[in-house]
Length: 476
Image (cartoon, rainbow, N blue to C red; front, side, top):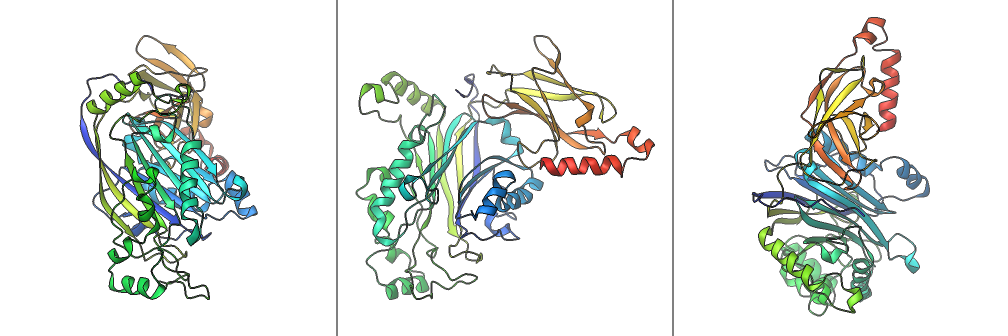
C-alpha cells in the first residue's frame, strides 16, 4: 500500500499556488501547433501546476496501438511546449479517448507525492471506454487533491443518466491510500470534462439571440447542470464560476459558426470545470463495516484541517474561441490555492560527487532528511535540465543494489559510466520512491563533461554520437 510519510509538525509556512486547468473535447483532431493562448504562456504569472483533461483523443486502432507504446501526439506536443519552461509531466492516464495530464514546475516536484491514477468505464454495457472518467490523485505539500476528467452520456434527454454516471464513477474509483481511499475523501477535488449537460426548454432562436447579445445569464436557469444541482445532493457539493462565455458546443469545424448542419444542434455549455473543497471531515453513513472514517479519525482529520488550512479562489473561467479544430471550444480555469504547507523540506537531498563524464564511473551522495518507506525498487535517475517527465531519464541506478558505502547521515551510490552522456550536458539527479510513486528529491544542476576519450579517438561526432542519439531517441 502506498502512503505518504507522516510530516513532522511545526512547519507552518503559508503560500499561494497558481493552478491552470484545461478541458477540451478535441473530436479526434491532431494538436494545434501553438498552445500559447490555451496555456497562457505569455502571462507574467506562471502557473505552478497545469492539469489538462482531453476527451475524444483519436483512438483509431492503429493510432491507439502506437499511442500505447509511445506518447500520443497531444501528450508529446504539450511536453515539448512545457518542458523548455521547466515543467515536468508528473502523471498521465488514458482510457481510450479520455486523457488526463498533470504538469508541475520542477521546484514543486519533490513535494508532490503518492501520485496514483485510475479509470472507470460507463460506455456501452460498462465495458467500452468511450465514456467514463479518468482520475489522478496526489499529495501537494501534504494536502490531498484529486482531479476527475469525465466524458458523460450525450443528448438532451439523458441529464439524469449523467448524474448517475458521476455517482457511479465517484463510488467505483479507489486508491491505495489510507488517508484518502476514495475520491470523496480528498480535501480538494476538481470535476471537469465534457459533461454533456444541455440548455433545455429555450428555443434555438432565443439561445442564439442571447449568445449574439452576450446575455448569457438569461440562459443559466435552463442549463441542465444548474437545474440538476437543485435536487441532486452530489451536485450540491460542487462550486462553479459564472458561465460568462459563449456555449462551447457545437461548432462547424474550422469556424466560429454554431452547427449549421441539418441537425442544427442547440448550443450548450457541455464543457465545464467545477470544484469541491471539503470544509469538514467527510460524513460516515451506512453499516459500520462500510464506514470509511471512524469518529476518532474524523476528529483527527478535522484538527489537521484546522491546523493546515486550504482555500481556493477561482481567478478566471472562460473559453477560447480561437481554436477551431474541433466542434467544441476549449475551456480553461485558473485557480489560486492558498495553503499552509505541511513540509517545506524534501524527503531526500542528493548531489553528484566529483567530476562527471563518460570516461569514468560516477558516484551520487544522498541524505534522507525525513523518515520514509524506502524500497528495493527505489532508483536515482540522471536527467538533462529541461527533462519532460519521470521516464525521460538518461540513465538510472538502483539505490539498494548499487550502494557503495553509508553512514548514519550520507549514503553513496554507484553509477556506471556506460549510461553517462558522451557529449556531456547540464543535468540533475532525481530520487524516485517506488512506495510514494513520485520523485522525492532533486539535486542542484551540475555539468556532465564531454568525454575526452571519445574526442581523442575521433568517435565523438560519428560512431559514439550516433549510437547515443539513437538510444536517447528510443528512451524518449
